Amino acid sequence: MGHGYGMTVLAKEKIYSAVSPYQKIEIYDTEKLGRMLLLDGIIQLAEADEFAYQEMMTHPAVMAHDNPEKVLVIGGGDGGVVRELCRYDSIREIDLCDIDKMVIEASRKYLPFMSSSLDDPRVNIHVMDGSKFIKEKKNYYDVIIIDSTDPGGPGEPLFGRNFYHDVSEALRNGGVVAAQSESPYLLPDVVKNLWRFAGEFFQYSGYAMIYVPSYPTGCIASGVYCNEHSVDKPRRSLPEEVKNKLRYYTEDMHHASMVLPAFVEKMRIS
Ligand code: SAM
Image (cartoon, rainbow, N blue to C red; front, side, top):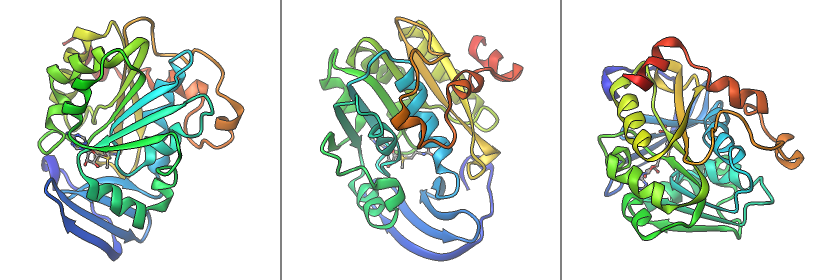
């Protein structure tokens, strides 16, 4: 049970269990939510509602950019964000950097609904710590998506001030970042810190709240940042080839998700 809060999900079968150098990886088939991936006992995704998270981690950032061509995903070894990115014909290059090759391998084998686009020719997979990978890239990406585990494990450096500095340097002019930004009910101090760090390096921010029943407290968020323009509305129309395939993100949802409850809005300025 992570962060002193737990959920009970009835499992039908344990599909996979292994300990990598970074974390314990488990995949279950469950009664109500389909296949589920857990890392160190914390739910990362469930087949029944993963679309909400993957779409909202991806499309607000991509649609807040005028014409993204080069994208980096840090974490996200399950392949869900890459799947969403591959829907855009205009995206030409996708780097995926996950620290744990065993997550990627397990997803390829047991979670085909997540990993289906990992072999797309535009995708290059790098197995290393994202906080190190990003230091080697300057002025390169149009969009960077940080699809990390929670702080406390291997994801810890991805929640620090230095990392946000390096992310800002890796972006080209007009670049947009989206970062897994936790639940404001469960980890309010982490949310406040992320806003503070990102605010030092990005002038504009949005915090997209996402309703995902299988995450503790039923929600999680994507922090979206840019230095050149606001991110709370799409900057162009959602391409038809993408629109027809989505189940959660719409142009209206982009804006609506960033209209925040008062207690969350206060975290931005506290
Ligand atoms: N949807 C998710 C959630 O619930 O937070 C995140 C899913 S994704 C599986 C998280 C990935 O981040 C894992 O595959 C993990 O290996 C990766 N990761 C953790 N720390 C990392 C780091 N420092 N650099 C790159 N990848 C990292």
